[in-house]
Length: 75
Image 1 (cartoon, one colour):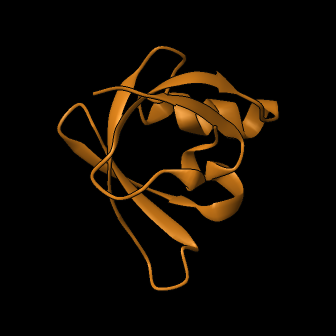
Image 2 (image 1 turned 30 degrees about the horizontal axis):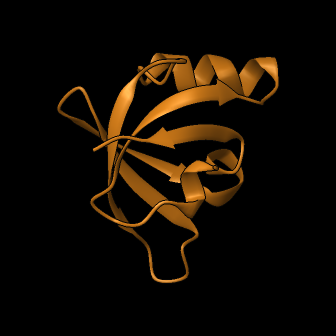
């Protein structure tokens, strides 16, 4: 499942990041790494941007970025 397919207020764990070196580096700087737990807070109007909570910080990702992150839902 991809990050952009999650519903708001869903908790998940990152299982894989399928991106180039630059994007991976950017995501790592936000604390988004394989095995990291996060929560989807909200989407923008057309789901072009997703806001997630990682380690008590809010991070905004564009749709293209969130489509490269594979996740697994947790309870």
